Length: 134
Image (cartoon, rainbow, N blue to C red):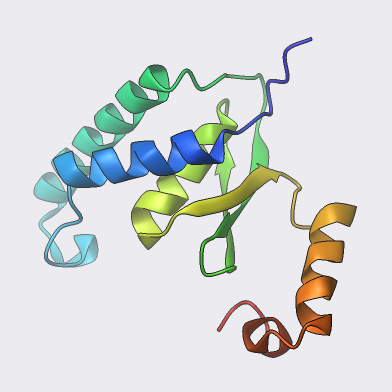
């Protein structure tokens, strides 16, 4: 059976790094960029993203879902997707400039994620004690 929700975090991080090389973040905020220029930049970003999703063989699934993404800093971020969970992981890695260490639909509230967080708290991990949003 094929798991359409599966996200290969190594492939997602690799794709985000390649996209960043080919299409780096702009020097100024998109909100400060003329609309036509910002739209063209975003269209090219999505073209690159779609191309790399094909390169890494990211699976597509029907329906909209929230994908939780944990970055190398242990901070949780996420994104709504319409058909490709890996797209959220690649996008989060690209925009935040960090490797993905975990990603999945409703992952943050899973028993495994809760146990991993508690283990970090028990070990005295300062970021876990302060909250991963720091």
